[in-house]
Image: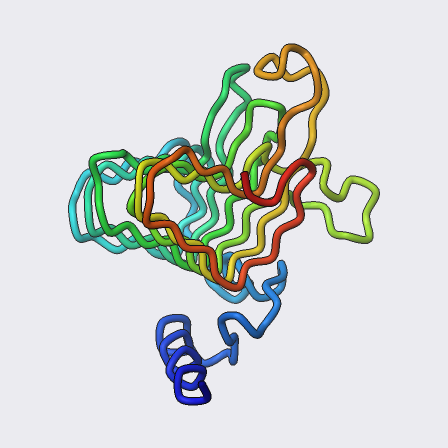
Length: 211
């Protein structure tokens, strides 16, 4: 109904700001998702671990991986780059399975060392809101969709939500997980469970959009 649409519009503008992004109507792109370009960032070298419940982390460029090990955590207006290639599967953002009520808002998850081992976000009981997960190359560049994560979002156990996110994946050759074949590069992987919601997202997957 019109009233329901107005309520959704108001709720999302209040959560994000006044830049007129309307969930389910505005197409998520690199320009209107992820860390806003006008945010002044402080660089944190290496991995960053959150152990304190209820904190808000804002305005960080994390050169390593982000680990969330407490509940009721908000991370907004940040960039996570994932650190060096380890030669083994690594998620750039790791949300522990015993946590609840994690919010990732306007977060860019872009591997600085993309490879067949680089994945995006994994966890349970979280909301990813207007996040960008992908590579650095623009659609006009030859390397577009060749420098991002294998999977963008990994939903595990329960209660994972993606709202207004722009998700892009890269397919790599010689993936040991796939027996030496190409990587299985999905925008959203769901590992059983319940309570999942995907609203108003843009998916550009090299395998499946949602699996």
